[in-house]
Image (cartoon, rainbow, N blue to C red; front, top):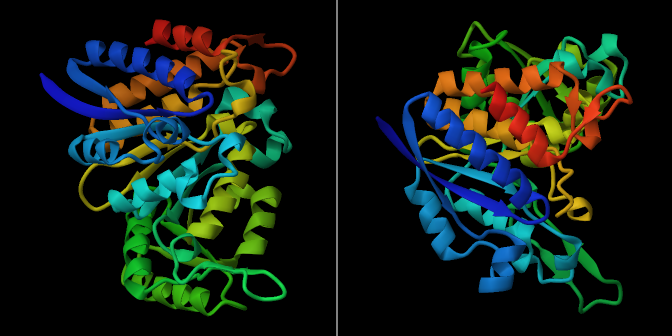
Length: 357
């Protein structure tokens, strides 16, 4: 029997609720598909700061480095916004990505037929959407230096540096090529090369690397146009390749095509070692503890973990099929309610999915 060790970071807000559902689902899947999964729970985010004075304790990071995969729920709360930036939960995420060298963020955006009417866009606009955002994750303006605030002047200033080197762009492009070759062989590289030198390097490097693969069809798009096109005609995209900042924005925009940001999973990967699998949504502290959160993005992230991180493809397919069956029967969480469906709590919809598994 295969044995896996994963670290579960429940984090803040609704994290513990959706994590509890995920633990039960993974237990059922491991039993059905004859593998053993050890789940090690560690503190991360705001809850870790409260106990250890840091959002990313060394003990947590060490465990993450030693495991087969990391399943992360969500972090953050408005009550931490007054902390120094390096102590905020979101800074813990940056530290985790850097510690594990997670340079590639993969966010699939696929419309589930049972949720076509949940999208804020017309059915005919979104019904064929099936795209993947490939976002560079540990470079760009979020990590660039120098950065800081200038306070010893009459007018206070702050600054950040957007920087990439060609090697960083090359390796994320290689990931996009690999994914595109498994799909429709189309890559749209998104930048702002008309005004940013760093984007010009991005465009030039992507062209150089993709030109080596004659199967790949490459197009380029400015980020403002890409945002417009995602709303106007999202079906035109297959693989979107972009930088850290632009990918952060565009992937959240794309998430809403599905009807709820509570439906989108993601994977953050490196060339070796464990990846981190997490839902796109935030910690939603306003509904924390009410048992009304949508656990589906967390479960779909667990499916990506099973497929990509653990190579348990049958279990991943089992989970996604179970989710589709529950949705097709008209069961929904509150964020997906359409007036005709049966609204269930977070734990209740988890139980329905377990029954289908």
